[in-house]
Length: 250
Image (cartoon, rainbow, N blue to C red):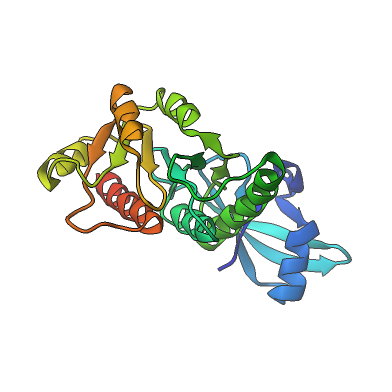
């Protein structure tokens, strides 16, 4: 079933109808070629923890008219907000990272400029990149039937990232020189539903030693990802999968 995000203003709560226009209209009519009688899944852009099921009533010029069938209130979002602070990777790896992180339940993605980052973005390039990245986040949220579209931030410096994470309950840094898996298991299993979690992932080449020192000075916890060294585009997926498993089984 196809999933869409709409603004509250598109919903007529009295008549229980929904009007879809713009890009989503084009996608429904010209790409998906949906017809009257078919059902779609809908979330509001302002998060309310609900999934709405609408049936397509009719397709008129420039608008898809839908009728509410029922509402699902079993929230599919993770019970904790997870913030991925991702060291800027080279090429198009960031697109893959955002897509998969959204599928795995991330709440926000914050690209971070670190010492070993190869990519350097000026303001103009950063703005263009963020627009594309946000579009990828929305597409992934639709595909995975998320209740929210995770926000992708404008790239920040490492110092700015540390300050942003200071207000979060748990702050994790996967690092190859961290203590063993037993300590990591204890840290992750100790995260409670409702706590906010910051994950810092280094770019290609990993963290500079001074960056680890700064992280530790901000009371961040280093964890291991196992005996193998993971690529930057793999590390975030791994820790997100671990957290999803630990949080959703409670």
